Length: 157
Image (cartoon, rainbow, N blue to C red):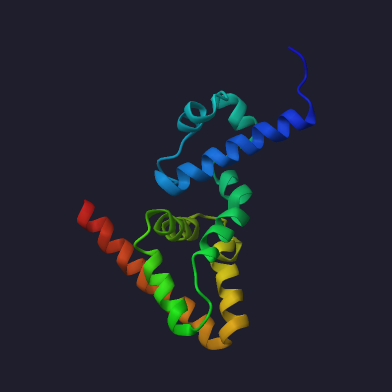
């Protein structure tokens, strides 16, 4: 078999990343697998695992894109609008998936919470716009989100 070019390899990696992001946001990180990604991309499970040997590698590769997606949904015009936009995000399945992913990320051994860019970028924006009050609000909203997601999970069980 002929060796693939760097361009072809980059396109394959991007295709896998796009499918992984879509699945993380729709079916969730826990339900995404090498098999579901293979079905979505046509790339073999072995081919996918060649580029992403561990499942956490998808999160690390997609971290910036997930952060952009989440922060784009938030309104930084005022503290009140920021809080409301965050609470509204809990009603959007894909944004709720990002928050679920954050808590999943926090529970992983050997992973620093600060590595999850969606929350760190949000905190940075909040600090820039609102000072320490913005950082405090992000922490409060994370707590409220955790309670909401736990309640949702217990109702589903």
